[in-house]
Every structure is written in C-alpha cells, then in structure tokens.
Image 1 (cartoon, rainbow, N blue to C red):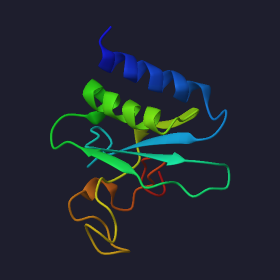
Image 2: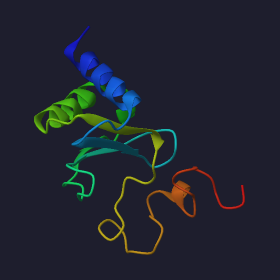
Image 3: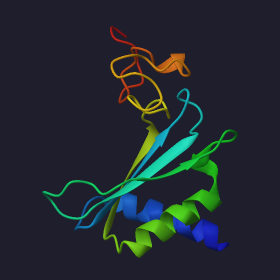
Image 4: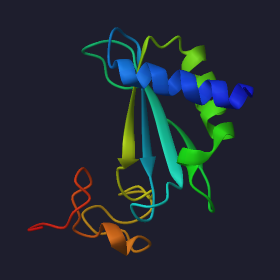
Length: 129
C-alpha cells in the first residue's frame, strides 16, 4: 500500500472511532455544489473548552479533494505534527468554498456558487424540502 493510501486509511480509522481525547483534528470539505470538493480545511481543537486553531486549507480547481490521496497525506502530516488523538471528518460537503466577508460581502449569497444560495449546509436541501 502506498504511503498516501496509508494516510487516508489512518484518517478514516481515527474518524470512525470518534472523539476519544484531545487534541482533536477536524476535517471539512467545501465545493461549488454537493458533488465535488474543491477545498478542504483542517484545524486542531487542543482541549474541551478551547477555541480551534488556525485552519490549514487545500484547494483544487479540478477534481474532487475527497478522492486525492496526496492531499490526504498532507492532511495526515498536519495532524501528526499536532499529535492529534482523535479526528472528526464530515462525509459530505459543508457548503461553498468561498468565505463570507472575504470572498463576498457578509450576509449575501456567494456569486460564484449559486447551488448553495438559501440551502441548508448540513442537510444540503432548500427550505421546505
């Protein structure tokens, strides 16, 4: 098995076990719609009442980062250097890869990702459906 594949397997195994102790590494995927992740963000939560650390982000204009073993190897290296004990990772895509207040004005919908306009990020559905 390639080292990149081992990294993915390690992350998935840790995530399957859930939060057991701190520090916790979190991994979230974002994309222009619910079918392709063009951004992944990972951060560390050092303790139970601690604020998360600064996130580390990876981007791709093409492809899906959820299927990129090289990116998973980089995420695993980040988590290993922070000596995480637990990993939390969402399976789906949590929303638009652009950041409100940075890439577009606060309180508005992202002009680049109309799919997410008015959509519940957790359910991936429009209100009323």
